[in-house]
Image (cartoon, rainbow, N blue to C red):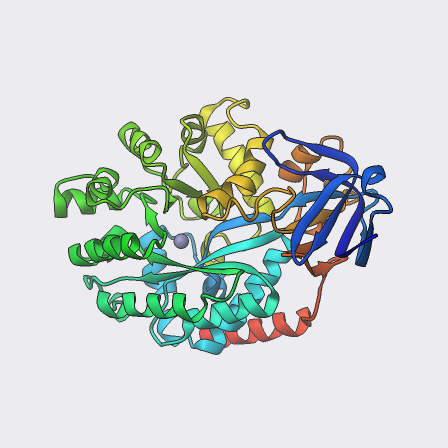
Length: 448
Ligand SMILES: [Zn+2]
């Protein structure tokens, strides 16, 4: 018998591999965080001697969900959006908060974000950390990723263009300083297999011409991916038309920004020409339906992008414009928004929505070879789904039920890189009640 670290047995496994393989009563053997074998129980039975066993009888096993865009610090303004659109919400609620953040507050917010992610079946989060008013805030998020065992991408946010009020100006940093800090973060954490560092210019209107040019150069010379808010509102096109005489997407294409290592966040206000450019340059898109709805930003043309072969991942956005970080909800909103926008229920299938939340989400984050589906050689990033909850029962089609009839309460067990981080709905090694009390008290103090 072969020694393995973990054996998950008797589960109904939805692999999300390219063949759409589902195994009705299956097992997954894991060694050193990697899937060593996956198949029917009777084929794997008796072959492995696991240090730890999970009985998934009567439950479903899915690949972990991939949240391609979050701002975990924004949990401190959850519920305070007060029906404002993007710019008003940023000016009145987010920017005034940012100078008051410190390392401990960012760490606490990120710990809470990772805990909610585990309950939501998420095993990878890209955190777009754009508040950098004091040193060490990105490091605090990375520390939370490490302490919770999360697979994370720290997207180091920045603005180098001052144009607004005092709160906006406080967020501005010289581009040289930003790029040095990005280099430092990447160097400091190069040995962490679960972490990657990305560039995250916040939005075209927050960047100078030189900032944009140097970011593109740095990305190319360091082989580092870039993610940026793009066309969330018409403001991107208005700004680039006024400053450069071109709309945003063609402008970025000319600048050499667009390629397979660029992740465009939101992509709500697109013209046909933009869709063609995103496809031609193989740009990834991060879809944030709850945030787009809450801020009244609009409906991103996701079904159209998908039909044209643009790679799409799903996301929650920050907890301040969602107002949570529930990826189960993000899947349902994605499905429903596209159906109602097209007045056609067949425009986007549940299985495609799940593909966006798993395999394609991993792909747009450049880790499609590591995670996103349950296959031999990939990381054991997964969750076990309990169907016996009032909203979901009876589960007759597991993919449809996950996308349309589920809550965070269905997520029983979450495994990241072979490590069981949550089991039976209880997060391992973290006193959740104490954490949430501390978070609440910090938020009350911060927003007082
Ligand atoms: Zn965002």
